[in-house]
Length: 361
Image 1: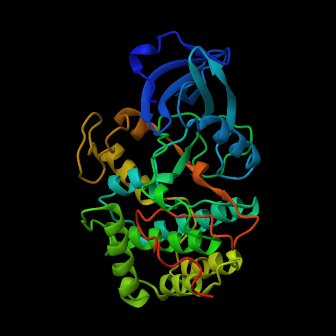
Image 2 (image 1 turned 45 degrees about the horizontal axis):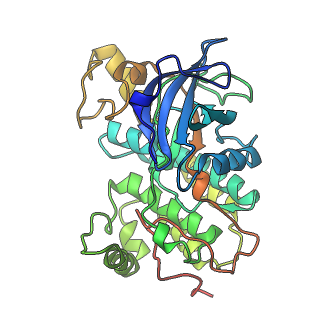
């Protein structure tokens, strides 16, 4: 049951010190608000879920993030409890998602940006796997940039974060496929498709139409399996095809060699003579906008340099990314204590072949 903006009073304070300011997003559980710590002015994200929700999620989410606490790129939980008729989760406020930033950059990233993101994203997924979870929903919407005042370094634990961003827990279309087996292999392969999505601007199996979800998934599966990796990666460095072929070659229960995959891209990065200076494509666009006046604050649209819909323009141009990628929407993760039991599913939104299961063995 979704929460209602009209039912939340302007001076609604949760956890004794977090005042709700305005709604900034919504999810399957309810709504997300920008909150402010009345003791120090720090901005946070506040998720509200009706205590009468048929399938409550926030308690599970809070427990999951506590298990993952301390990992680089894992949002910090500030408070969980009940206020009035709501379950409430207060957490770090993060910046735009990679999908937001992809749109901001006219839906194409340079190889340099893709490789810098790949290094961090592999690390985020490895950490989740090391905690005995499978993400199952690897997509650009679920990776957000951190926000801070230190533009050229990773924020240390305990440093405050500020800014405005979206914290939308999007509903996965694959819930009906929750009994389809997936493993660590599938998370890593899905990431490979995300990287090619950033390189190409789209994937061959996106946008397919069908009368039913089942038929749509079948079409996605057919198109995906009929598209050779070499064709998908044509025109881009061979390392991307090597990455995908490696992931596809893993056995169902086999643990990926994360360092090998990171080194694959790190060596390519050095070969291309790039500098790991945390200057992403959107960094350049914002700098250009600041110096030339392009992409005036307050405007919106699809052109490069225009803040994505739902992102406050002034905040978007003012935010200083700490260049750390955060993973969100991990609530669909599954413990992998028995990887071969067939209990895990991955979102087909970009890439999942639901028919495959563990047939590669």
